[in-house]
Amino acid sequence: MCNKDTQIVETALGQWLRFPNTFKKSSCLVELSNQISLNIDTRSGKVHVHEKDHNQVYRYVGEIHITTNNSIMHCSTIQAHSAERSDLMFSAAHTSGKIDNRKSVETGESA
Image (cartoon, rainbow, N blue to C red; front, side, top):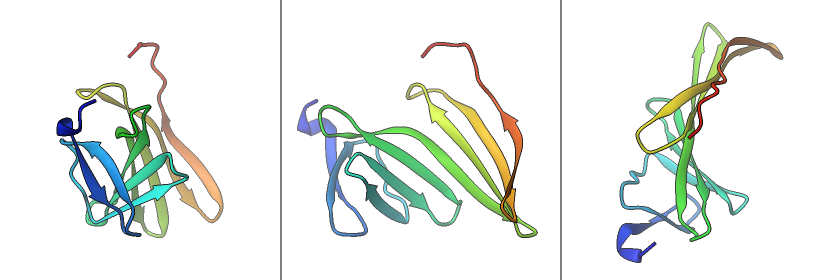
């Protein structure tokens, strides 16, 4: 990938990571384990997950959405298969150490 198709973005800890030009930084960007970055939107509760590719560019792989309702934490994930499509992969409610699987979806479609 050419550098003109990417941008360098600073994380909350002052690290610089390379993303596609379409990337929009949210409230907080952090890097985990030098392979994964989390772009956290504090207003919506969404955490956009990016993984470093062979060109050292962080690509969108999905998101985690975290909400609470009456002290019950709800968490759902969406995995991206392409730039145009994403599928709900898992949704759960968590309370007092127990997980209640609300919806778990697996599709036989190929990307």
